[in-house]
Length: 155
Image 1 (tube, rainbow, N blue to C red):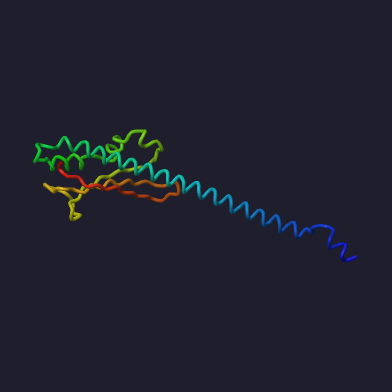
Image 2: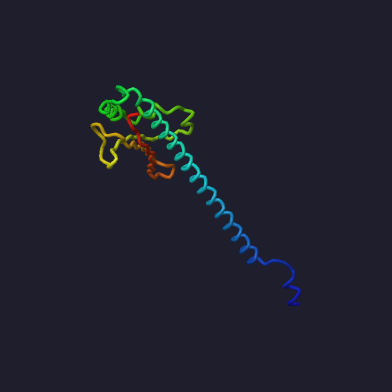
């Protein structure tokens, strides 16, 4: 009689354990999906910010031509004044929608020029290092900062 009862089906305890295991697996899967979605969004924002930085560097390279006085002379003071006179909104206005299709609400762009020793550029420093930094707050509330750098010469 004891053997017959053991083979008749599942007990309530067994069903509850199976449901608990299933609920745990579903919960872990849901948390993983939500987390990966947030990480994907942060990476999309990072890519867009880096594209914006590259567009700013390209605009600076194009504008550099306007400060060439002759083949051998370059108006570095005017060039630095032009860069230092720009605000984040000015830099962002140089970025087209095609280059920046995903809006990042609080994206800030800053440009810093340094000489080859890492000191602030001025005078006739040639070449000059240009650092374009994008700063924004991610979907998780973390401040993210990415920098793109290049070296410019008077030619």
